[in-house]
Length: 63
Image (cartoon, rainbow, N blue to C red; front, side, top):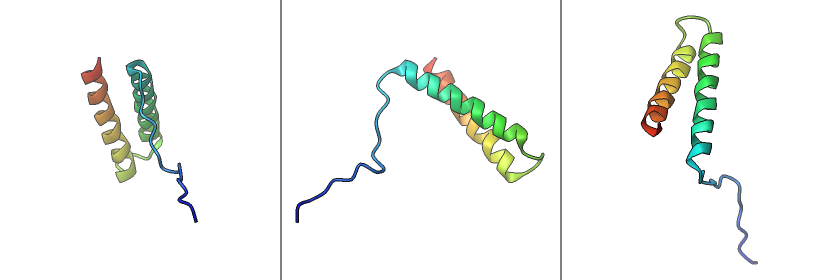
């Protein structure tokens, strides 16, 4: 038997910084939308808000 290489789970790096910023802006807005659609004071809503804040900090460092 020969070795088989599976591409499932492989990561493709983002080469262009502009693409990275666009992706992060999309994710930031997506997490904010999810957090606003959750009932108030839920752990799930807090989780989405925290993720959005982390992405916002990353974006501020890039720009």
